[in-house]
Amino acid sequence: MSPLEVRAAVRALAGSKVREVANAGFGQSDVLKFWFGESDEPTPGYIREAGMEALRAGQTFYSHNLGLDELRNAIANYLVALHGRPFDAQQICVTSAGVSALMIAMQSLLEPGDRVVAVSPVWPNLTEIPLILGAHLVRVPLHVAEGQWRLDVGRLLEAITPKTRLLLLNSPGNPTGWILPKTDREAILAHCRRLGTWILTDDVYERLTLDGAGSAAPSLLSAASPEDRIVGANSFSKAWLMTGWRIGWLVVPPSIREDIGKLIEFNTSCAPEFVQRAALAALQRGESQVETLRLELRAKRDFVLTRLRAMRGVEAPMPEGGMYAFFRIAGHTDSVNLAKRLIAEAKLGLAPGAAFGPEGESWLRWCFAAKRDALADGLGRLESWNRSVTERDAHWS
Ligand SMILES: Cc1ncc(COP(=O)(O)O)c(C=O)c1O
Image 1 (cartoon, rainbow, N blue to C red):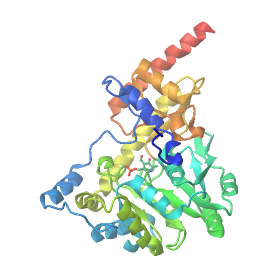
Image 2 (cartoon, rainbow, N blue to C red):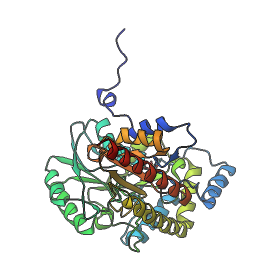
Image 3 (cartoon, rainbow, N blue to C red):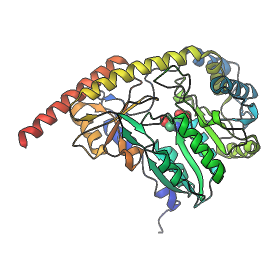
Image 4 (cartoon, helix red, strand yellow):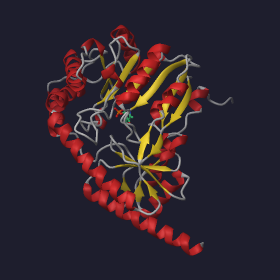
């Protein structure tokens, strides 16, 4: 019998290395788990209540492909307040979470064989979607300078050639916490405008800025005009603790909105109405909670980074945004192997850097959106493990 065949591009997809490690530790209740990108707190009560209220009212039917008018208006108004420039509900498309927003955006823009440039290390879904669609990916690595992740913007601009269809940017970045500086943003926008290159900006962590008082990271969207070739992807998952609800949105040029609506029809048809009602409550009532989350994450970032940086052989650049520490330990180059060892020997669950592209190899990601006690316990485990491994190596050398 001939083998059952899926498309070669699908067969060639790498399985998730975060899952590979997590699967090695699932079912072990004594492992402290910081491997996934979500808070350990459930969704705030006022959001859950709004979802339940909609369910009680029987809002269980299909809704408009692009989302409820009320929610699209609320998102547009929210973006105006956040970025201080006009946004219109005509530009907003509600999607079933950020990952679906990314898939739909790329389905609308990419032909097989297109060249896509991505700043990396980066969340694998951003870089695997172009491969699913048959596009060709070029990575431009971030580097560490003076204890922070940095982009060589000249190198990025060189990589964006007239043949580049799409630039993928994620700022604040997962896993690095890097934030695209305003000056680089202008240079990138000017270059892409000149070449007619599309930009997909993943702003899922834009509210989680950990330095300064700004309420949002400087998105490319705030510098662009509505008919620029720029699409923004966003999500309710991180800032409103709604990972399990699967709700997000796209900001698109008004002239492609109808096409996006067609793609939403063939992907998910619409986001569930009761989930959209919960998202609406998040926007209407969530500002102080988002600010509290941001300040808590800043304190947790400072706590985790101070302890990591004090450990022997640890290099831990300071994340400027998001909810992850991305660090490495001298002498360990295989991050999947190291993450599995940490599960077995220290009962500590972290994500391997290799999951975020070859540039992430040898690094580990720690999600610090967790309770302070759990973080302290995990740091203690890593300290003891690191000390015992260093002592053992010294003994045998
Ligand atoms: C960079 C980035 N973009 C998008 C998402 C998608 O989030 P969701 O699909 O939960 O909305 C994530 C989730 O971890 C992410 O890290």
